[in-house]
Image 1: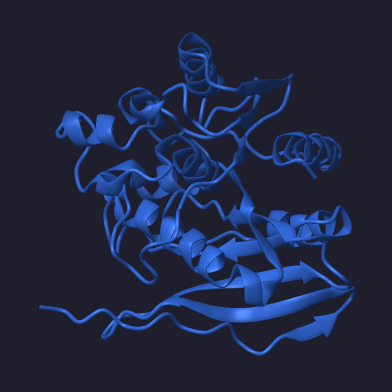
Image 2: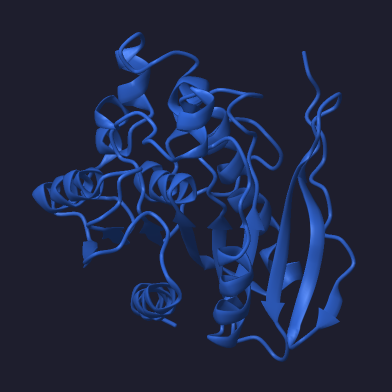
Length: 291
């Protein structure tokens, strides 16, 4: 029997450029393996009562790499300026662990943040999630799975809620069975690899039950956290049909969801689109989190 380890304390804070930084915070020790970590930026100054709303930013990278920059750096500036703390959370890559490890990891990060909310000047009742592509997928999964006991995992702090109260997702996959293979020109196509196979441990055709279980479409209910989904009409990597199916499922069950069609936008957002959709995301979170 594995003995549960005590919750790890936040690192010593640093102050820089108008934010209080908690770098390389250990979310969950994993003896014999690399621990799960996050980086947290909290607005400097007196927080509102009971604390700052916080956004868990999940990097993209097809579940096989971490890409917090430049979007992570950009949100790391915009969100604190708007009065949000922002935590860049990390997860195990798909070659190291298959689904649902990635969901367990981001849920562990949310629980750790909520457990230490008082010490970090965070409001435990106002948690959001934000991500693009693979990160958007995990933001959606946080929104649609809430406190599902079967999907919590047992990493790090257990007990606090892993639910978020709102999510912003850019170009997320929602149905692995209908996600096309890597397109010509992508790094995955050039190597002949398909990150979905790494994530699931087999192709969706070989393991349809797991592909369905890993797909956000399977988990949409009326109790899902409010979501703002954005997707480009010219996205060849993750076609806009993936988000159209997700938003349709949300509307059919009465879930609170908004959809932004981005004309002539591909998988990567240009500066203007990124800036505009960040502003839209911040306003959405303000409305849904009561900021």
